[in-house]
Length: 151
Length: 151
DNA sequence: TACGATTAAATTGTAGTCAATTATATAATA
DNA sequence: TATTATATAATTGACTACAATTTAATCGTA
Image 1 (cartoon, each protein chain N blue to C red):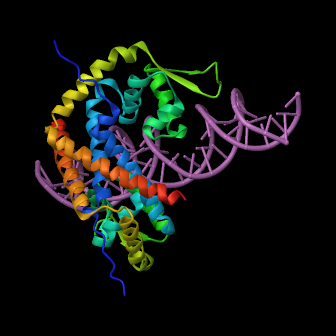
Image 2: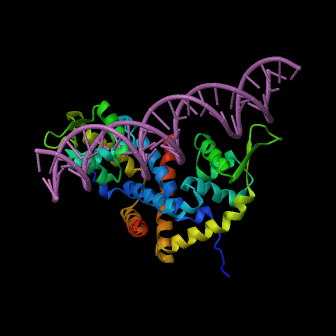
Image 3: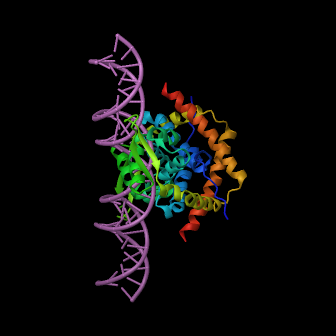
């Protein structure tokens, strides 16, 4: 006969991640308030600052988001003047996202603000490294599980 | 003159947490599929299995969720037969959530299924502990920041 | 060339999240 | 006691997130 392991919420790693994610959201809500950006909009801009111009598909690959999430999000960024959306003349299926001058001009201001907020988190490099390592490991194992379940 | 630290998405701890959270969601979507539960519904049940009966307010304190999230979520759990929602006769403002017999009967089956899926993650106790510790630390620092910004 | 498969975005529907407001009940107090 | 303040849920609106479907364009191939 099998012994059932009772599950306590506070012991659960998933709940720690879930909670940390929400607190990070709040953190960035404060950090990004001067720019009227949400966290998902911010990470979309982050990848664009690195790689623009990009197709919606490519952005989705970087952020693990599909068009159901990205299309409205990008329309909001467009209406706020951060990006432009244009169909590629070479392939009319793809939409090319480019950064506006405003987005390029604001980049360092955003970086500056975020960096200074991050400094206020008072995490040492060692602590930060330990967190990154732990999450990378977790990521790998979750990937392996999710991959295995697809088949 | 100040040097601006460029921000790369893949280096960002927030993005690791954001990604891990989504992968955990997918993990639990698979684990909970036999019970037709979402992850937020599952953690609501977890705290109820520990503490029921509970008011909506008290559940919200445990999960860091407000009534805007909980009211519809609990209505779904009710319509699927997991819980009952009744106004307290002592204080008509509060709604008391109780578990149904079905929820009590299913508890061990859910635990069993989740435990066996967690085993498939192949994380050693040491690795699990390291992740928990890292996230607890992160939690504290995020709390400290968010608390400081309120004033 | 024409037709079937594939691909990229957009759309639709369901669910979660939070801020802000509203409705109702209870508590505090003038 | 009447009025004000406070507390609890519910509601509304905006934004994510994802599964499933739809639309349109492109590719492969018979």
